Length: 159
Image 1 (tube, one colour):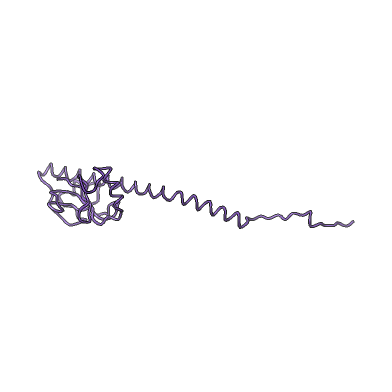
Image 2: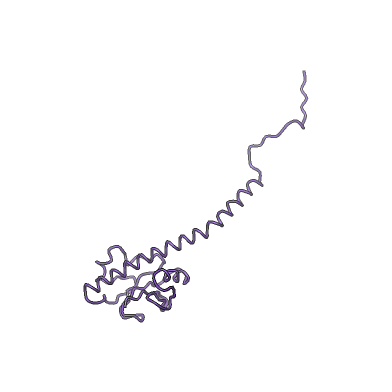
């Protein structure tokens, strides 16, 4: 008894993916990543803004509490250095750490056009992002109100 094999009757079984299938998967993953990146960037920006505003409020509260108890504002010091008088009031905020938007905190006393204020120097975000912050804490215009752009810094004016 002999068997005859016909090439037409046999199917070739493959256990891999074709190049086309792999390319389709790569394109789908690329599209999903392209859709997700703007959402991730916006969430990151919102988190930075919220953290900065929270830290700024802590600093404002500390400065105002000190001024109320001492009868005046703390003296001027250098950028990134907390006035020694404010240190006990800044328990939840490390003044020497970079701010959530980059740069460093600076205490302004009779400087930068105000009697007292808290500024951020050397920030690394865009001016558009600073306007978003201004819209949440002030009037949304960085040339007016309590939160203003001045000489390469942004300052929250206390007085």
